[in-house]
Image (tube, rainbow, N blue to C red; front, side, top):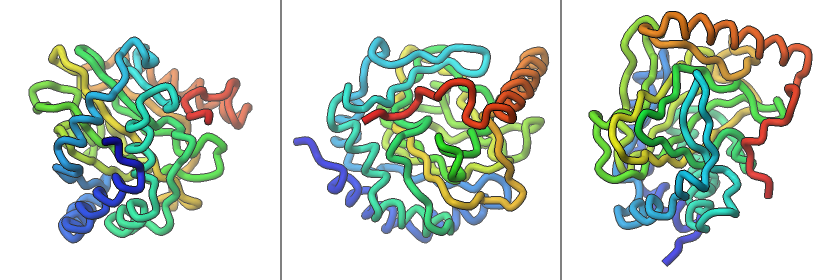
Length: 272
């Protein structure tokens, strides 16, 4: 039986409330670098499995492949099973937003009904996402991106599979904190000028599926935050690639100085 977003949000809120103090401690202890928390067994196992089974096929998703990233995305939610839209927007229900804001001590975060850069993410063997800083703002450049919510739904996912979230909390010259994309795990991370993160290469012939949301705010998390486009870097072993990405960052940043909203509209949003 398909649950609606209100019912799913109630389940999420119940689990977050149960672990609230532990999650607050987890976020607070990491706040001075890249604030984050994660929680396992977020939803009933059968519901998480149903969400996974409803994910679109790779052929029905959009491929993004260049030197920065290699993955599949889906965001025009009315093209897919209704359950997928409901679970995405469950994370935008007031009861969930309020609990997450209290855990992270962020005042009045705002969910994004347009799913700008959010929605569904699918990664198969050899897919990756290089170290990067997310675009600092929403699609209209009016609000600051402050939190990234990632809900993983692929069964039996382990560290050895790759495709795991990496937080470069000590900078790109040090090893990252790795958060496994474990089945039924929600990971929440702060987004600001030091929030370098990535997804390491998928090593197995399986598809890692993730439900993605962003929260925004009228003010940035850090006073020193400034507007920036999505910025990519190479890993320590990718010296030449890093130079190319730095040049790419420079060129795209300067285009946005001239054209505030970019040369073309970013298509990655839900057009209802």
